[in-house]
Amino acid sequence: MAHVIVASDELLCTTPNDCGCAEYRRPPDQPWRPLVNDCGFWDERGARRQSVTDHGRLVAHPLLQMLPLAQDYKLAFVPSYGHVAVLDAEAAALVAQLPLGQRALRDDEAAALQQLAHAGLVGEQPTPHIPPPPAPTTLVAWLHLTSACNLRCGYCYVAQERVAMAPATAHRAVDAVLAAALRHGYRNVLLKYGGGEPLLQLPLLLEVQRRAQAAAQAQGVQLAGAVLSNGVLLDAAAAAQLAEAGLSLMVSLDGPPALHDAQRPTAGGKPSFAAARRGLHLARRAGVAVNVGITVTAANIAALPEFVALLLAEELPFSFSLYRQPVAGADLAADAEAIIAGMRRVYAVVAAQPPRWSVLGALLDRTHAGVAYQRSCAAGEHYMVVDPHGGVARCQMSLDEPLSSIIAADPLGDIRRSQRGAYNIPVDGKSGCRTCGWRYWCGGGCPVATYRATGCHSAPSPHCAVYQALLPDLLRLEGLRMLYWHQRLHIHAQPPTIDQVAHTPVAELIQRLRRNGEAAAMLR
Image (tube, rainbow, N blue to C red; front, side, top):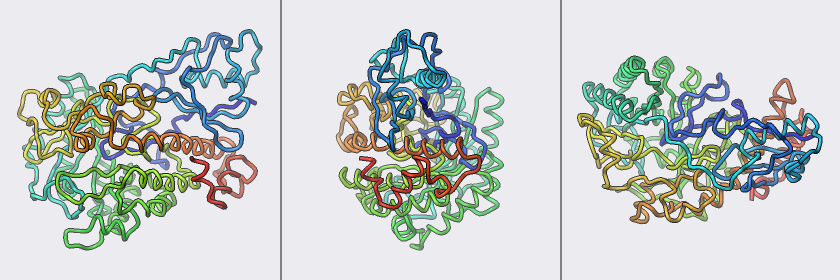
């Protein structure tokens, strides 16, 4: 029987990264609903889908690739385009026989082809040209409510000035963001509350969010909000307030307790891991959509497999960002070889404990192998970063270089027009990227990291070799995850243990991975 698995809503819960360039989703134990799509990704219900009127004329996309998974399953994808899909042996053989002409089809074969057509993997007249992604639809704005922080992270890009944003400045910042959204045609806004530590200004944060919600509703703008915190100050009362305000939460954790505490000590030099972990669970218990943000450094990369196993056991969504060197601070960057080897060990752990949420946009820095985009982040295009004084910068990494202010007539336009510092050009404008098949899943990498490493805006990312090496591994990992959860959701009425599904191909794979440690080899 020809069988195709294309990720549905229930299998595509994705996690946000620290730049807010993945789709915000609720965690797997809460009702699924998209909050905001801040990078203008493909409409999953429309742009790639086509109705099949003549199955006999279908042909495989010229750029279609397949990777082997477990047993006779394969992962099918077109780089930078379409959905990924898992095919059994019969479905893969069916694709290899296209076009079928007048051959009669069984119902399961017709259904499989329909799914593949909807995923953009086969079509009646597919072209080898991958169309550029559509323009973003959401304006993203950071409000740095304070530069003060209760931690002393060695890689922090914010100067510790202990300056808090005044309420009047915060209100004017919200007005400026909404005005910029309307001026430039954005009907969706994502407000991100950062610092320093934004929970040091929790009353202001909540008041600003309420004001922003009312103003956005009055102006016909859809608003979402997120808090980026170290989590240490979160107690039950604060968690309940975040939930009531409809805010999501990212908490930074950098590894097991000892390593995290070494990289992220309190201002007094004390550990912070236990308090941050407690805050995360309090927030989740209160109904807040949470995510763990992990910065990959030379100091913690060897311990990340152990840490990821802990997060998976606690069903905490997480995402990885590669270390970015601040203007001042310790150089904690790992080299490409260490990153590739370390992340493959992480992927092996994930393969043995497949999460409910998609890994395509969470486990490889700024890349997202499930959606297409021209820029890896919103900086310089549909991004405003407001400092505590009301200055507006292009990126939080260049917070000390404001290019406009909230009192300017058009701060977003000022940012777009400025040629100062690291500006974010489309990946199609990068000489080393425009012919790369992965370009719309990579977006060219972090523009600040690229500029600081090369002194050039149009150069490929310094992490290009890492992305190219790991993207196939990440795709295989997603295929294994989809297989596993398809079995659990659609074959077994109650979520089974591994022992209960011992005779299914996926369970057999997972048992082998756990018993023999074969995950890393299978992912290469």
